[in-house]
Image (cartoon, rainbow, N blue to C red; front, side, top):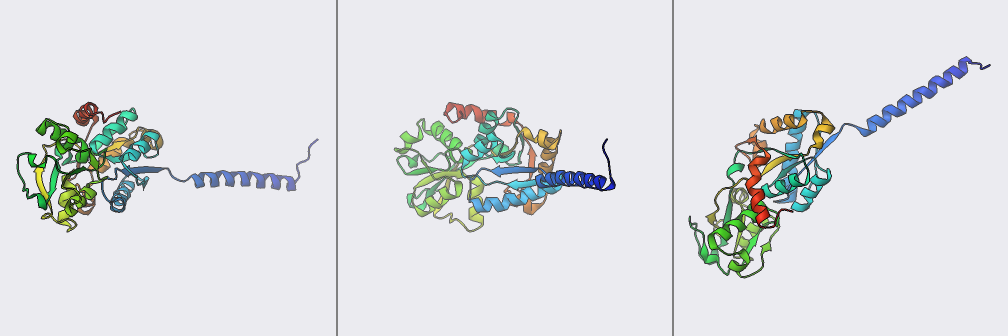
Length: 298
């Protein structure tokens, strides 16, 4: 026969309370789920972290979810992090987005800047070449030293390479007479050409215009000499895990929050002053086809 004394009941109650407290503490330690997001490092990484940190704060406020910006070391690293699920949302360039979505079935391009369906690149040259802006492709660059941006950049590599091939009928290696050079980012391309380290280069038009407007680049030394035809580029791409982590319909809510971003300072930080619009994977099918043709899509 078992005896249940008041003391024993008190001890049992205490044990249950401790277990309950431990369970609550364990749940509290896990905390709210965090959405980790990133952006391709196409410019100064410190500036990108500051800008996209503000974007994350806005999205977190709109959606009631904690957003954490995760810097990427290079374009490939951002795609790999998305593939592995280490980030669930990314501001990709056209080519990076195509690569990421190809690696993650169910990933969706959900939004793009209003300017992104008709993006373009600039070809720039050092003032010593004596070239000025022209609507015609600058064939005078033949045999000159030339740098692209990142190897995985749409506006700093893929599309400039494509248009150089179209306009000259030759590969960049044949036209410039050397292996392709890569600066690693748009702002580096601009500064290398400004310094005369390279005689010419290709970069994102938004970065060039912003650097000039902010006094970070001298357009008399780094001269814009040609604009490419337009093409689709940057986009927000969402990982399918978001629906499992944050609930059914979350991706559509995220899309709406991005498109609903209207604060001028916030849009300026994202360099999308005209705002964001809806996007889909189909918008970037031409880039995927072109990338495959140049062996840039695995």
